[in-house]
Image (cartoon, rainbow, N blue to C red; front, side):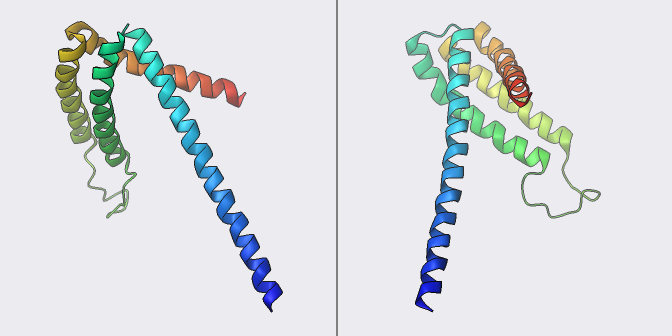
Length: 140
């Protein structure tokens, strides 16, 4: 009896270690991508050290707001209705994304100027395209 409990505890410990290492790997990959994104944006917008220090806290706020809206838009939140009866108004989410971008373009412009704050959104799209190409290359 005691031997079975001991074996179960050992298996349970290995499972917990396996799950936590998988989570750590995913978190490390995410952090690596975020670091690459910061470097890409810094390089493409030609940010000085001071500008980067002031820009990225604002960018992090922007990123959190956009993720929240995108999750709601794609339905990655608990659904109350079926797909057919879904109350998600995609156009309303698009409008919310646009409002967030307009708001943050203004905030960014106080740090990096109007031209580069407008350019930021193109740079962000270029990074997404770069990331997708990189992931596709790794799959092949």
